[in-house]
Length: 263
Image (cartoon, rainbow, N blue to C red):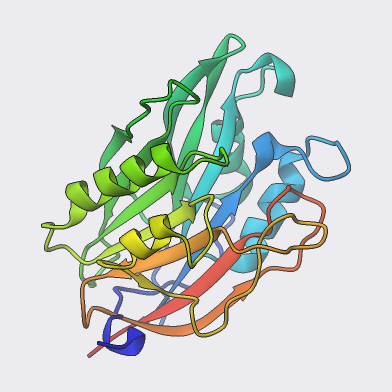
């Protein structure tokens, strides 16, 4: 089965809304963005949430997976970054806590043009007792379109892949038998040819495989560790994918994938 046989999507939306009120455009495409934010700190050492939000708004993404979001931590000035991203983008969304940090929380966030349903935080295996990793999940139902499940995840970042291997296995167990069309996006912290990604791609298709581009480090990207994956077979078709050429706002570059409904 080739990748183009593996793809489909639900809905579509117009350009990014600055008011928080989501409207369905005439296009049938779905724009998916994944972005590791480095708690809002850019390669210039500045924490600038408006700069991050401008990248998101300009992408016209319908659904966004954000990793490394701070909420009320000391290092980022006790700002509720999750609330700020909602305000600055005008999108719906929810934050999932991975760990307590400096009097606040650190984790992941899903932003979406439409309200999220069945939002949940799934803790991933952490046998080495390093930073706890999670997946945040939600059911998304764009008006008049087929519901899909969206999964935002961030795997272990250490050189040894034992924890990542178990985390990937847990993700497979969670969603392998789910008949709902699904999109998984995030920072996998591993290369396309790694055993971890080989494991993931046994059940998922890599939506940017036809035009792969490195995403990290932001200043001069050399490796591709951020992915958008889709399933099941025949569910999605990729129209376009690109790594957005922003070298300053974070230590990763964001990956944007445009999917379309397969009739």
